[in-house]
Amino acid sequence: MNSNRTLKIVIIGRGKVGSSLVQLFDLAGIFHQLIGRDTLQQQQAVPLADIVLLTVPDRDIAPLCASLTQYFTAGTIVAHCSGALGSDCLDSAASLACHTASIHPLNTFPTLSTAKATFATLEHGSHAFAEGSLDALNVLVPIFERLGFDTSVLGSADKPLYHAACVFACNYLTVLIDVSLTTAVKSGLDRDLFMRAIQPLVQSTLDNIMQSGTSAALSGPIARGDSETITRHIECLHDHAALYKALGRHALQLAIHRGDLSSEQIQHLSETLDD
Ligand SMILES: NC(=O)c1ccc[n+]([C@@H]2O[C@H](COP(=O)([O-])OP(=O)(O)OC[C@H]3O[C@@H](n4cnc5c(N)ncnc54)[C@H](OP(=O)(O)O)[C@@H]3O)[C@@H](O)[C@H]2O)c1
Image 1 (spheres, rainbow, N blue to C red):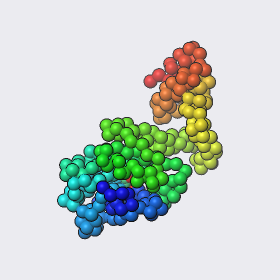
Image 2: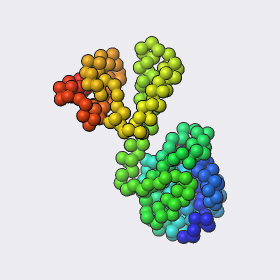
Image 3: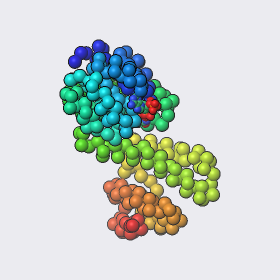
Image 4: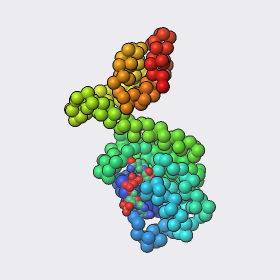
């Protein structure tokens, strides 16, 4: 394999991630070619590529890889950017002695403009998590670090748990805020007003978590051992009571870890939060 500067990198998939990654390749001065669905372009570009990076939706990765096998040569690095899938979905390329991997930029890009804006501020710290064959990782990881990502390698079998962790931190944080807004509306408040009102609360909670850790950042009735308040919440929540209790049981573990609660308070809280 040649040095990074002379590597031929072909990115297939002109969506949010593909189009945004090329900004970084441009900034880093790494030669690349971004192509889309044009099969003639794919036929011409792939046989000459050292690295083929598939930035297509998860469901399209394995079929696209299989459709390109006739153009891969032994030793080509074939990778994708999915967080949920491992490199095993590129087995059709691996069976031709290609080196396969996945490298997941850990960020959220709901739209093309947010993707481009997020990648434009990459110097503020963004992480990519990679797994796959060592031959592929030895080339891909230094390239992504040149693009500006801090990069870590994880075990291929750990990919589903890794992605579940990402879903908790990103998607379910969004869900929690939505549940908060829905609950505020039920209490008679305006959704937009409450959204603005909780912004400092959400931001300072995130700041506290990042500075001090989850256990130290926990405040509120469970941290104070206030089971009467928890009971009042559960009585009025109806549809969201089960979610509240499930999260409350995890909050109780954090509070116990902090060591501020008496055994009596822990017992009352456990009974109140029981299924
Ligand atoms: N968005 C995120 O927040 C995010 C974050 C990290 C990682 N990822 C991962 O990055 C990958 C790409 O996601 P994305 O959000 O960039 O998707 P996207 O915005 O939906 O773009 C996917 C692109 O792939 C193209 N495409 C689909 N099938 C193709 C094929 N057979 N040949 C060539 N191009 C094809 C689509 O073309 P058409 O428009 O013509 O369908 C579209 O331009 C996924 O694996 C995803 O899991 C996404």
